[in-house]
Length: 391
Image (tube, rainbow, N blue to C red):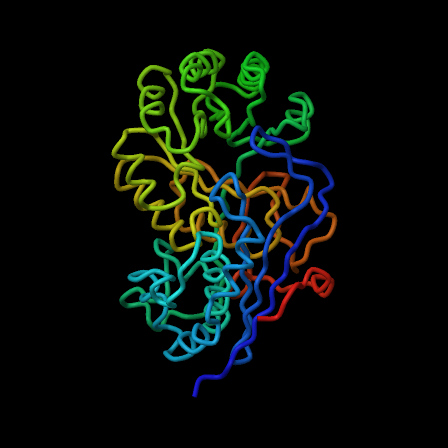
């Protein structure tokens, strides 16, 4: 009989050294749920970071939904077949169908990241090796015996984000080297245009620059705003209109002389199909928590590529643990992304709830793959202060 498992939930609200400000929200603390699943002597860690303005979910709603999940049944399914069989099943069927779980994207992300970490640890491989598109992926035909904990190689350049809490001169002086710059829009278009122009003049014509409006523009003003920013030197605008404004987005692409990246409007594969059919964007911002887990995030990258669209891998502000390394693992499987956002956990949090803390090489602004099996991290002892329930 499969061994019963245990689950422990943490609600992590770490104070941030500095706030992060953008048109949709101001964040001064983290707001993540971490889940520890233990079965058969192996523990997997998962995380989600729900944001109500993105998917409509909150930490409270995810906690309520988690109470309805039949975790004993999930443990029984997980241990009821050899672990090397799971990657292929998960790729074909998806996490919800494999484990009989119904819920929002953040609930699914919380569970999927924990299960993938458990499987990676059980098999002795990085969890990224369980994702579609990754070289040497476990479960690929011919790869059944290719297990082992060797570290993936190579690095990825990461973007730098200028939010409303930081002045442009300080950003340019302290946040380089620059590979891609994302500017959080203000409520002053001329200020944003000056910021774009200053960065363009300082960093040259080859650096991609994007302004993220976080759904703050109206359809009536969007074309004028886009043209003004394009004149200043912007390449992309991200999520300029309210979610799902397909007609307005199509008009903006046609008449605004700027490329459009969608974020909040593309939470599911169906959203992506609608955006593609409406000719509403040039690229997707893929975020693991928003999109329902690493597996749907990887599928969304493939969907974009299939239809000739670009994509980047973004983050929720103030991720605190497994979600960080999960997003990076997906990114290493898709090196054709426009850019990767590494997050700023090293700047936000004096002490993190996981060890080792996820790192960015700030001398080069690049990422290296995490070492070890699973997501390559453990809960720190002081994480227990954030424990809220045993399930």
